[in-house]
Length: 284
Ligand SMILES: [Zn+2]
Ligand SMILES: [Zn+2]
Image (cartoon, rainbow, N blue to C red; front, side, top):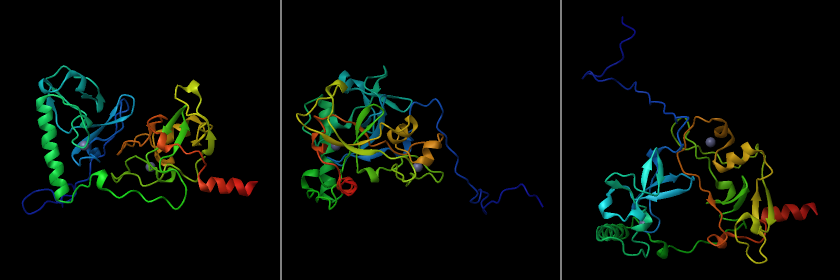
């Protein structure tokens, strides 16, 4: 008997013993984001786009195919280097372009005739998606129902000397790491066993470089008193287990945006969430 020969099918091919190859993020990689899971669709027009990180970590949605630089004005060119998107051409005859510049769901200004033609093709595809019921433009969607519990849908957090706007309620922020089964980790970042932040009312100071709204104290989730590693865990959006597992790649972009009181004024709340107010009331 030969114990080393692998089982084979009748046609000689290997039979079902394939094990998925373990992938690792290179220690010197500027991004931990796996490229395979980052395609998405535009919320406005339903067309495909691909998400990339910029050098400062912010996400940008690029049109999924390359275009010749002849058709794209220099100020609109982007290129990719080691998985990171940069706002310039790379000297080659090809470049990428941000989707929002050609999104038919936006009133974009006239670019070049080839880009206007591309935008027209995307608009046709949007029309076909709407007709097939595969896309509903935001203007046709029903308004969101107010939540029964008063909690910010996009809370503002204070960490790592900055203010960040989350993309969802605090308890719903999910770990972005890839598990050993190659799925996104289901665990929340907000974990009962980990030290937690404090809800408090805060007036943004002009010294921080952000504009202060007159007389406005805003509710924010303050993590600035936690150890650096714990603040970094929140910023990189990882559960306590994956904060320790540095080799795990990211399957999704983090949902934080740098908070800007002018852009994000609708997310400023001047009262603490219900749950916190009730707890404070009981203590008094
Ligand atoms: Zn779009
Ligand atoms: Zn995790």
